Image 1 (cartoon, rainbow, N blue to C red):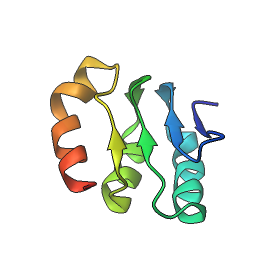
Image 2 (image 1 turned 45 degrees about the vertical axis):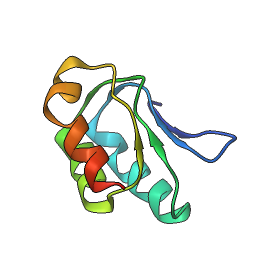
Image 3 (image 1 turned 180 degrees about the vertical axis):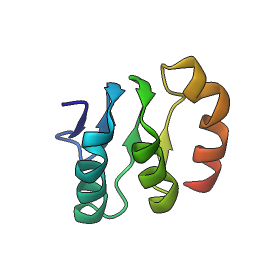
Image 4 (image 1 turned 30 degrees about the vertical axis):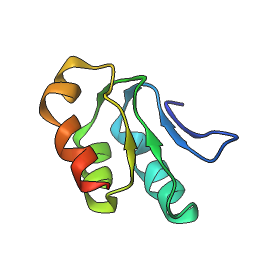
Length: 82
């Protein structure tokens, strides 16, 4: 699984985050309000995962490991999550 809740209460996105895990991400965000999303180890994310993040606007730790994510989404996502 590439999306998980850490012992410290952060939501961690690691490696490739496929569309099948968008629902899990949504459930984690709903069950842990105010949780920080750490996507520094994330190399790619399906648009469904990105859409959940855009809708939820959680605080984000980054930049992500994936160059495309870092280039196109990191500054926008971190600005929205503040």
